[in-house]
Length: 389
Ligand SMILES: Cc1cc2nc3c(=O)[nH]c(=O)nc-3n(C[C@H](O)[C@H](O)[C@H](O)COP(=O)(O)OP(=O)(O)OC[C@H]3O[C@@H](n4cnc5c(N)ncnc54)[C@H](O)[C@@H]3O)c2cc1C
Image 1 (cartoon, rainbow, N blue to C red):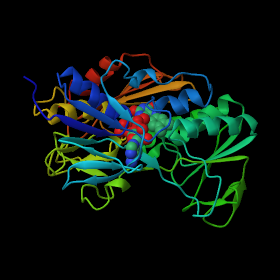
Image 2 (image 1 turned 180 degrees about the vertical axis):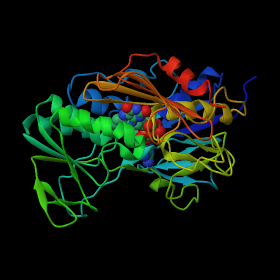
Image 3 (image 1 turned 90 degrees about the vertical axis):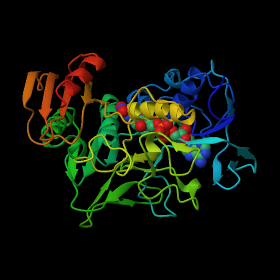
């Protein structure tokens, strides 16, 4: 006998939404399953946009989120409204999709710097963005990347591999906010070795030109380039939830079951954050924040499906595993960030791009980092968690 609702609507055709759909079917859900998506290319692996598509337009990036084998009703229309009273999701074409359970998995959209009328700001979130940036880089000799986070360092990696001159601008050194000072220093060293210039801004940067052809630094100095890319973070894609009270500025708060306070309404992936009154990995040390990483979206996709069916989940509703590729070096991180000070243990040589690093946090948790070291993700995870308590 099937457990759970008869009509499930998932909003968001990407890794969180498709993982939820797969898990629902795996758990035996046989009812109606509608997936709403607003990307004309459907579902694909976003991490490959910066690592592969910028270098090769022909690469197929759909496999990790393929769903041909699933019984889904996919509707490529943007959700425009969540009606809690009528329990339906409206789409841009005026249709309404009734639900017994709804899963919000709309991810995030890039933060932008352009003035409302300013044209030509490039960002990187979708396949269209990546293809457009690829083509611009093919014709460019110089690029400015604003923001030195993980995306803001992956784009220069692609530029360097294409022989495009690149300048990265931020108020803090590369990856300092995410990784802390030690790894930041080594990433900066790697970037410099690949010809990437870093300009430290003293305050906010504005875009220059119509269309955009450079930037204006805080003190008024200008820099120009053929291509300007903003990699200045993202915001939860929650505007369509306006009027419901389900989302706030940080995103959609959920509890340990990926449930919102509204019965039958759940959320997963980049659009969410775990609320402190619900479940945080470590309530004494962890602040509420979004975890905009692939594995977190997978974990939450699985948890949310179990919760929709009223069943216990097989996993916790968060995953801090993260990876990036910088100038040919694969960096894998298992365990909490930020990483204060130097690592407690270093095995190998970070200078040679072959090191296993370990940070012991004051609260007993452990972060393990493979910096160019080839290691199975499961082994890295075990190193991070084995002494976590
Ligand atoms: C270039 C890039 C590189 C990345 N690299 C890494 C990496 O190396 N490692 C890592 O861990 N993470 C990486 N990430 C982050 C990772 O891709 C995200 O954490 C993950 O995609 C989040 O999945 P999601 O399903 O929650 O949201 P998303 O992937 O953002 O998907 C949300 C979906 O909802 C759709 N949608 C939005 N609004 C609506 C609406 N109103 N109606 C219908 N559909 C809607 C969107 O079109 C989209 O398909 C990267 C992200 C980017 C952009």
